[in-house]
Length: 153
Image 1 (cartoon, rainbow, N blue to C red):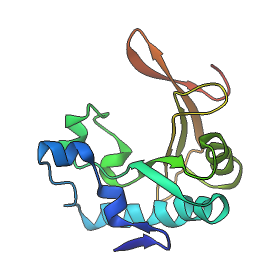
Image 2 (image 1 turned 60 degrees about the vertical axis):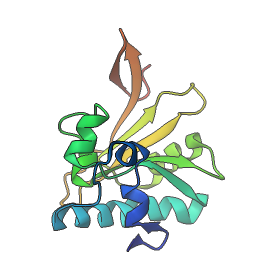
Image 3 (image 1 turned 120 degrees about the vertical axis):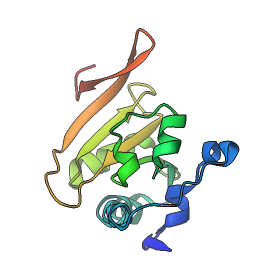
């Protein structure tokens, strides 16, 4: 099933952790499916059309999978509102800045990496509105992941 022109449901539900732990990661509510379609159409596809192929490194996470990977209890991944993305022909830096400068989003996070390129880009989108356009940078402090507002580091 296509969520947008270049993104399938299989791509956003694929998880090596789910496969390894025998966790079903494709059983979701209609609302979650609609959320995935909205982020695919409003964020993924416009970025893909300009920057070329983009890899989804983490998409939908069932509650069981989210718990298994230690995801936040209220993770937007678990309701189909978030994707972790990596550019294939473009850098993650280019991907981050394209989304930041051109698209509506709820959260955009520069995930680790260096000052010149994140390891991946986390983006979320709320189809019902109320998108905050909040931009953050992830940091490790005392072994825990924390977040600082962009452009503070």
